Image (tube, rainbow, N blue to C red; front, side, top):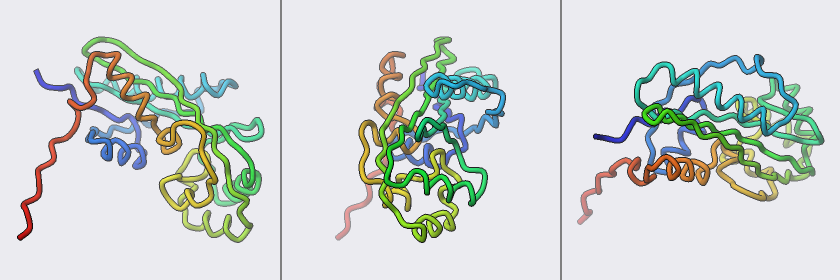
Length: 206
């Protein structure tokens, strides 16, 4: 019996690339879940609930698979932020974030359809933002990168230049905590290395 397919219930290219860099080639199946349905004030509970709803929505399409749902939000000065709706909001948000500290919450929900088990957990990472200028903020927003990201920045992109340091899991800030994923697979009785894609060795160059 082979390994079940690993399904990513997200359209996030950053999460897909992160899994690929860790040797896992996911089946990408965006949930298209309407996040506005969920209204919760507690950030940890909110990202957990959204992650579970996304995973549940996609799980109905499969008979046997591992379904990973994730959701990320940034807490700054008591305000919770997801993706900015437009450039103006992104600029205003960066003007508030610069020189400050935020907490990036990512909820993770992994459903094992074969075992009928769901594991849920939140990872939190503290992000210290640089004191960037108005010009740098406007130039960054003009690239379009922050408009695609919860928290208004991509650590693995240009946004990484504007982050001073992190406290906690760095892959969490990209959209999914690899340590949590490994722990989930351990709890379900899998070995993460079993999901690694076999890489064909390149021919030796003479």
